[in-house]
Length: 166
Image (cartoon, one colour):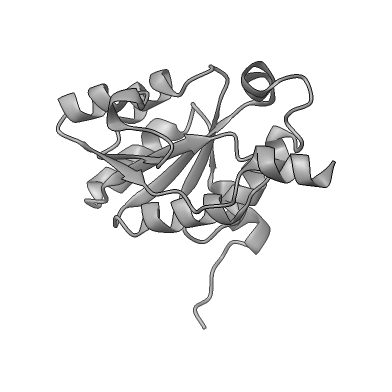
């Protein structure tokens, strides 16, 4: 077993990126020739569909950054009863996943400004989107990047899970 100077908690927390340390992180990853993969969502209740998307995103071979809607953004998009879990919890849960290299919060209703800052090599969304409707797709492709649409796993949605719990 390889020794690591960081505790597990520190290792996970280090994967939570801020707008202040994002540029340095991206520079280091690109310096090491790592393609940058980006996906985003609310990730309110992490389910098999989310995990499948993240696994398949990581299989594109690069550093995976997940943009997470802030609590205020989720509330605007999904209604007053959401989010179920607060942003700190959602950030920590996603950062703890092995396939995720970084997570970052955004407060806007879409991740367009974040995508413009990150300039991912690959933008990934789930199969409920078409390339023409994916926020940031045009910007990524104009910079020479790719957009990947991952088929959805049938039967999994946060809205469906919440309805089932009620």
